[in-house]
Length: 384
Image (cartoon, rainbow, N blue to C red; front, side):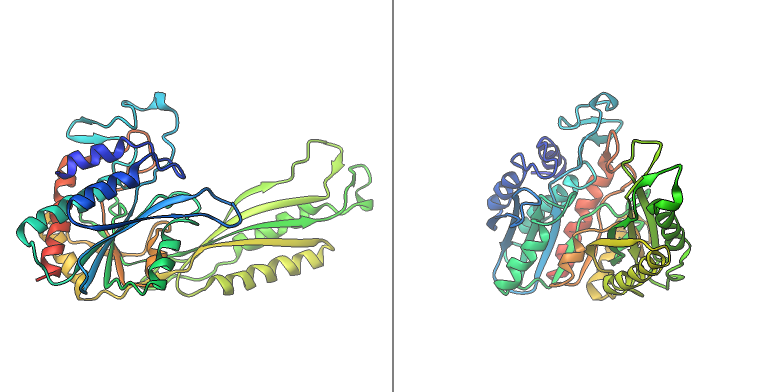
């Protein structure tokens, strides 16, 4: 089956996280046709924070090296359907572009790799090594029961992956521009400041937590974490919300909360950032006679894969097919590469990302064909 037909079929599944809608089973069916041993792994969260998620690990061959492709079948919600020019789960081709939710993030990429494997196997029925797929249905949301747990499963089974290609859309405007060789870390937090409630006419009898929280937010915003380095842009802390939940105009509230997120480079760890943030909040809270609480959530640490022979090989193939010289980058948000890097070196390369998560998400048919060629050539060179 060619990449376009596969992409269309995958987009038809309304697999909005955590709903699978049959997408994982469909991938397994296509891989079984190619001779893969497929294991559908459904994981549940003990604390029931998220719903059960279906994942798949499929492998063809028993020898090493094992080249793995990683991706996700889940997609973000389509939003207002009236804003789309097509039904987001009934893909159509318009102006040489395939339109549908997941067209570039990242069902088309999965389709390209499956098609690339099929064409590779027609040329090379026997090859010295293995090809595997690690596909999750939990990348766009909490990522609790997805790739993270599949990686733990593989570690327990001592399943070796020698190199992994993550098919995330990495190119800002045209295919071939960018290969991701690392990602910044991400840590989120909720700061709760407790003062004392009272009447606004008698402020001296109360302690307004909003005043302290504003000072804390100002201090966090002004505190420059670093200047970046040759591989990473500067780390950044962003205040994302301030909440008081006070509907009365004549009452000083008892507490106030603020949310923040830090995208950080390899000059920090989540632990070192927790200490810095905790120190700032503690000092200002104490100074203003307030109590504080901080709840942290770490999505992942920063990491970088040093460009090796395989990465340079992929870069040369991308340049040859697209006639664009890709740059190595660590920009953007988090991806499941943050889990995979624990067991394997990896790179990320996929389609153009300028319409991902947007209305009328799309991929050009030319890019679709060229991405399949890139993946196929990588397979052929890797197993020479």
